[in-house]
Image 1 (cartoon, rainbow, N blue to C red):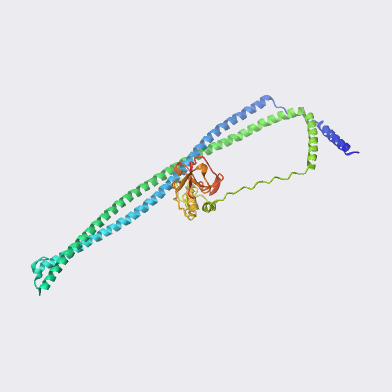
Image 2: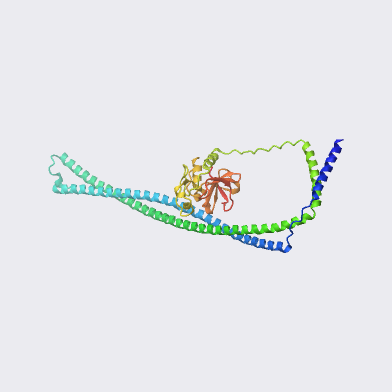
Length: 440
């Protein structure tokens, strides 16, 4: 028997076997009525409409929450700015206080020197008077033994008188200069004190605004969570309604399928035979060699930029602490009266966004202030579309809400928010400033 005949017989047996199986059609499944299916669909549509309404409300609530969260971040950075400004004002006031104290001591010493000089001059005049005359009178020359002695006494009295008067003038002039210096120092101290008071008031105002923003954000977060819970509950009810409709429609579909099972089974048998033949033919063909994947090309970067990037990347996983971080690494955070306090930032070691930039750029000798708004103006502005690896990206008015380090390829490294840690993330373009800041 030839190979073709064997194949034909096997194919016939296969078709006959499949066809024989198809003859045994099972009994018909349940067939729900149209009214039952319509009622189920109406119930599912009602739940779907409620889910849509809750979705819209949740979208609005989350958008408002995002705004309030951004506002909290902005207020936190303003409070941080006020803290930095207060520290600067306090340092200036301390310096002015020391200078005023020094000028006061110098003025007092100058006044004492004037009094001492005047006493010496008075004693000289008194001594001359007790001799019988004032300085330069005839009695001052009585007792001279010779004309040369008489001339020497005259020159001595004249020199002593003029020297004392000149010394008194010099001391008086010095006292005037010291008094002027004392007055200038006291005026500078008064100005520094006013600046310190204004900075302290600004810090208190910023902290009050930050607390209010945090409370509003927390309230909105709770409202959004309630809507989310309601939406989840209705989604569960929708799933149940859809399941019921799908069950009814499935029964209807099974009933319709039952009507033509015999034809479908025969067609399926023929199709499977054709697939088997195609698979056998394909198996006889050699498999094509896999295509080589091109390797990416990495552009070289400058050493300074890579040092900054490496220092920032070395802190991946370090927790976020508001007010934390300096030129040497992570530090304990400070109280913010809201979100940061709730996460314990004030007693844990970590970075905030601007603190991470301080540490990264200190590695190349660039020392930034601990406020993103100041960091935004620390270097050259470049359009966002031209940002390069190692540039700083900013968000919020004047860059005062957030800062991150651009890594290239649409990625950045950042210390994002309380409750998180230093991470690499795609660049977020919502609310981003149109310029990046380049320091290197």
